Image (cartoon, rainbow, N blue to C red; front, top):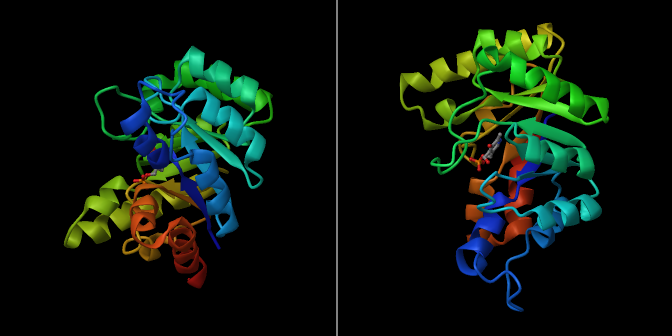
Length: 245
Ligand code: PXP
């Protein structure tokens, strides 16, 4: 049965919307670390946070505090830059998920192009794994990307579910098939399989049968529901959906 990793970037986004210019203000809220602990209490098996190059939501101090406080596992999402690699090698998260980063995007848009970036990715994967960090590559569900991830000796692929989540009509089935083929190939090539992006309470059940699926990383939809019903209930409802299958 897959487990749930909760992405808490969106909690930091709310904080930064008000306090970006005034981080020492005594009223700074909400606290992503408090949210992470509540998510764990409600059944999340991991916490994911993305330290972006532009620090638009999660800050370095958040990552430090998360490392000290998270008791399930901490998954650091990051672009491949020397600066953020150094943070990862110092903080030692349990997992790192390497993602492409583009300053103009609202959220991570596409998967990593592993095939065209073997030279940049290979030393980064090796350095992280050399310190005992499990490395995941966030990729589109394409055969050539899975093959490159295997060639790079990653531990996991995180299959990008955005195209599936945004599909309508007959495209939904086609995107599901793409995810399933990529998951099967990943398993056959010795990779472990996670998935995420754009998943919500409606479209998550259909992907639970992906070959080898271990973890789903979900943020926006859980935080959106939390605004209405509270974070613990929102996390617990998603855990219930995942564990029901
Ligand atoms: N996985 C990765 C690699 C991501 O970049 C994101 C978005 O930050 C997520 C999962 C979670 O996506 P969402 O917020 O759409 O659930």
